[in-house]
Image (cartoon, rainbow over all chains, first blue to last red; front, top):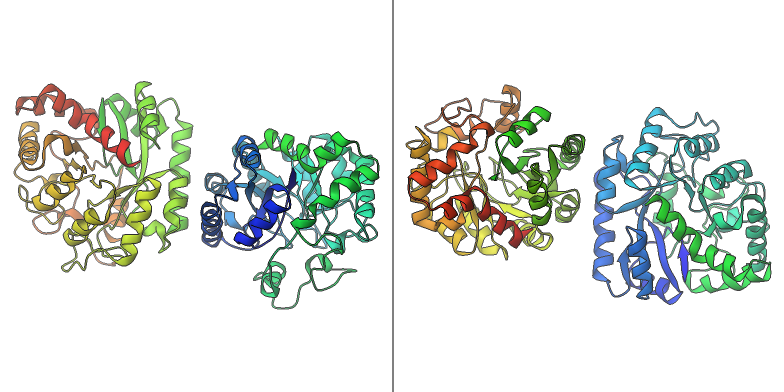
Amino acid sequence: MYLDSLICSRLDRAGLQDLVDGGVRCATVTCGFWEDATESMDSLVTWHRLIADNADLAGLGTSPAQIEAIAAQGRVAIILGFQNSAFLQGRLGYVEMFHRMGVRVAQLTYNIQNDIGGSCYDPEDAGLTRFGEEVVGEMNRVGMVVDLSHVGNRTSFEAIQASSRPVAVTHANCSDLVDHPRNKPAYILKELAARGGMVGLTTYHNITRGYNGSPDEWATMVARTAELIGAENIGIGTDDNQGGDAAYLAWMRKGRWSFRTQQGASVGPGLATATKTEWYRGPGDFHVFGPALRRVGFSEGETADILWGNWNRYYKEVM
Amino acid sequence: MYLDSLICSRLDRAGLQDLVDGGVRCATVTCGFWEDATESMDSLVTWHRLIADNADLAGLGTSPAQIEAIAAQGRVAIILGFQNSAFLQGRLGYVEMFHRMGVRVAQLTYNIQNDIGGSCYDPEDAGLTRFGEEVVGEMNRVGMVVDLSHVGNRTSFEAIQASSRPVAVTHANCSDLVDHPRNKPAYILKELAARGGMVGLTTYHNITRGYNGSPDEWATMVARTAELIGAENIGIGTDDNQGGDAAYLAWMRKGRWSFRTQQGASVGPGLATATKTEWYRGPGDFHVFGPALRRVGFSEGETADILWGNWNRYYKEVM
């Protein structure tokens, strides 16, 4: 039973079928990046309808009990998430409103500083703002996962401190192993893990350099991360993009904040495209993780927990 | 135990206390008139916070079971409603989104024609639009009360026909008894009642002329309405406005659609202010209804049903 803590796929019925066929029984999807409140609601309408129209394949995951029930039925529990907090449109009260609309995961910033904090690509990160502190507190109160994946290091560290519940990095790696602004330094992941937080290690090509030649190389990166923060705080967040075309990538990277080409995770040493690894092309390849994790030394129990149990435990604490 | 099917009060703790002290155990409030989606969400945030901050007095009424439980605790169940469908901002999918945010009552139009239909003050009413049909269907699906109080006669009649669940007029009277555009002709109320719908008869001064000199006069209007449509389809919707000042009245009447003075329910024979009757000044006077209804001949059971039971039965069918 597999759990993917972050995909940015534009799903349709075929995409849901791919998840189910691949054994993925829970996935957090990306409902938006730069969309304001009404645009984000438009997206939620689409996602809710997709799930309702394909109830034989998918269900809405809003609580650990629901997620487990949907998974037990052989369907995929879709957790609604945003990769930015633009949906709040500056309103603290919208945390609860979007929670009521089913949202359970929100990344504090995407690729540009906002009213909450700094992003991982900003040359300066002024830290979690006073509004950001309020937002984290409200997300704690209603039970929404605070996601730090694209968030700047200072803001990330301060958000970990500010949060009364464990926080998450749904899709990034450790920059002590793979140096990239999208990855997190060990000191941040250690602080996160010490408070019960989770990191979903990702297969995304440009932020796994040195560990992306094979499933075993990638599993070695997992093992080294586990040495730093403990296996119990690790899951998998592929950042996979099923079906997203060039226009979608352009929107993701440029939003409305730039008219020029922006490279997102290929900033620095990277490429302008969203290259996948040779061995992880989508949910049909999720089965490669387990055997690779076992080969690099994880026990059967640890492997099952990385594939499902750790996130499940975390969701019980924060949702 | 009293139920008020529509108030437009701007409540604070004192207002909630007045409702509780008056014996009102359930009230549908007005979260907005002309507000677009985000403005409506801002209003919902305020209402949710008011209820949460005063949980000793009030609770959120989103289902008949919850309403009954809150009432049994001696608190007032607040049902969140809108007196217009501007909150949809033209989006069919927002019916479900606002339902998820706790909204259970929506009037199709306020005092001006919109994309759903015609209002009671428009000289021509072109009927329920194709979008309006979709909205009624979606409200039926999610369990939101279709409120026709300020809706034009043709649109009202067509909405009754289009709806698969009984609809409501939360605050109006019968225009065969009190001639005013805000009141509904008997043929509409009969059609609504024949399908299990409800009308909340109102005490609002300008649309109760001839029956507003005393509780017994008003109860006589109720009795005559019951002769037309049956006592089991009648409740009380005072349209009371606790705490609303002149600016609030101006917003209600003019919104952003007019720069001139608009009179709302005082159009025609009325006044420019929101005059209350001498004997119903607010929830502290709700106790006058029961004895007056008994004096004009309603049985004890009928009286209790008009004060509470009929709406409760209706909510069980539609929410």
